[in-house]
Amino acid sequence: MESYQKLLLENKAWAQERVTDNPEYFQRLAKLQAPEFLWIGCSDSRVPANEITGTQPGEIFVHRNVANLVVNTDVNLLAVLDYAVTHLKVKHVIVCGHYGCGGVKAASTQTDFKPVLNMWLRNIKDVMRVHRDELNGITDEDARVDRLVELNVREQVMNLAKTTIIQRAWKNEQRPHLHGWVYGLSDGLIKPVFEMPAGTHIDPLYEYENL
Image (cartoon, rainbow, N blue to C red; front, top):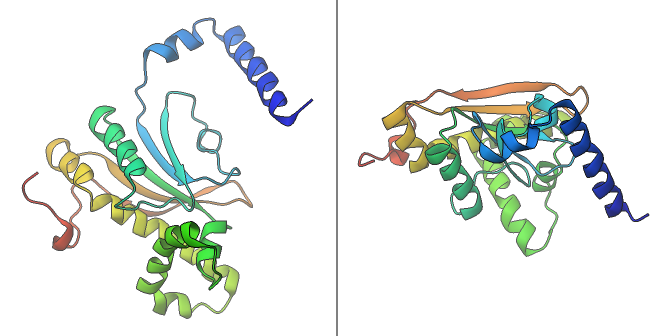
């Protein structure tokens, strides 16, 4: 049996189990999507949003990319953010990184990963530049990368707050609350590292008045 065929068999077993527990399970899901949360996480296969938060299908809207970045030119991310905030009316947006992130580790080196990855990882290098003094003061390499993971999450939450999507929702509806979390691969626990309640003021350079 090919590996992909096993996925299809597991899907059938999973669907049957859901129907056995609740015959109307899929009919309910097909008619309604009203998540309270938007999750912006890393593409790493070890960090599945639903499983580590104990949420069910329909409860959390998910976007994932390498190193959980919020890039102001990423139309994919912005489309997800706009849909979740403006149309689904989510109350919370969570940026969740994880310790041991390969993308963060790669960005902390001077290795050439070829054009596309270099372009993407440059966003993390910018985080390193902003926090250079703090990071250089950490002598242990693993601890330094762990701290960069936390700082990267913080900066991505700040990038969310710089968007008119978030600022407009803050002004008109006093939501969503922004959260920066880091997941521990070694213990399975989530550590909150940064919060921005709705209406938090940021550098006026990034604040818009005519929303």
